[in-house]
Each structure stands twice: as C-alpha cells, then as structure tokens.
Image 1 (cartoon, rainbow, N blue to C red):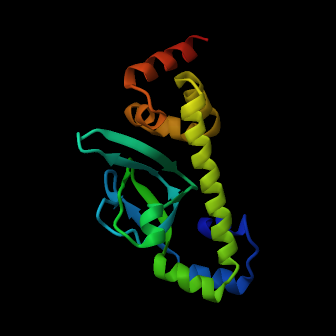
Image 2: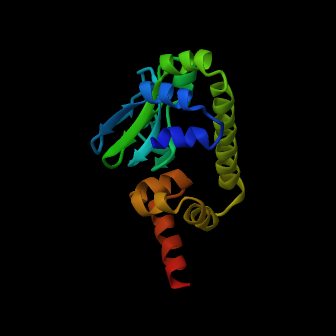
Length: 191
C-alpha cells in the first residue's frame, strides 16, 4: 500500500473507491542530495510525504546567517506551510540533505479532493493540529530547556534525525553553537 495513503488512513477512514481516487492523484518525485523542494520567492504548490530521505527547512538572514528551522525525515510530511496555504512566495528554503523520495499532492488536487472526499478536510485539520503541537513544543523547549536537555529530547523523540543530520544543522535547529553541541555530546557519551 502507498505509504502516503496509509498515513492518511491513520487519521481518517477511506473507502476502497476513495483510496483509488487518491492513488490516481498522488505523484512521486525523487530529489538528489542538495536539490531544493522550494526556495524563497517560489510558490509552494505541493505537500509531500517523505518516503525516504532527509530535508532541512531553513532561512538566511540579511547578514548571511543560516538558521535551521525544522528537519524532516522518513514518514513525515513536508511543505512550506505559509506558501502552500496562502499560495504566496515562500520565505524559506527546503533542501534535501540526502537523496529524498516524496509522495505528494498538488495544491489544486488537494482542493479538488475536498470536494470529492469531504472528510479530507478532517484529515487536514488533524495534521494541522499535530503541526501546531510540534511547533509549540519546539518553541517551549527552546525557552525552558537547557542545550543539553534539548539535545536529549531530540535524541528521544526524533532519533533518526540525530543519526542522519550533519551536526552543524542539529546545532542550528537546537539554537546552540557547534561547540556547545560538541560539549553536550561529549558529556552524554561519558555518562
């Protein structure tokens, strides 16, 4: 079974006919390492499910500082949410850190799905709730947890991210310097 459809079925029930309809509009694309899913100024026209791979969402400020905002890997959804929902130019980069295969639905097809399979509205609502919860947890951890606690939390909650992602991006994602991350990792290894 298509992994994207299984992800949808984890949240809502689908008839066989609805599954067939979804299969007819879900597309697959493989990106090479360093390819971009989206860049600032482009309009994000797809929401994807990462079948296999690793993607980094980041910004570059006016001083050329690069900040990792999110990391996504196997079996996670990916889109530039503001651009996708509002169909306006993206403000972030989404880049593949390794060869990445995604299953995706276009903006147009998703909105047609809302007409043909109205319960897809429920699916979208549930996904958005999960997204809001993840973002809120991330923000609160950056406020209330030490660098070590944030790293330990990442090890516990998303271990595959830690295994696959270059350390400089993990440090940026955690809001710490590379040297602080090295100290934290050394301390954990010595325990």
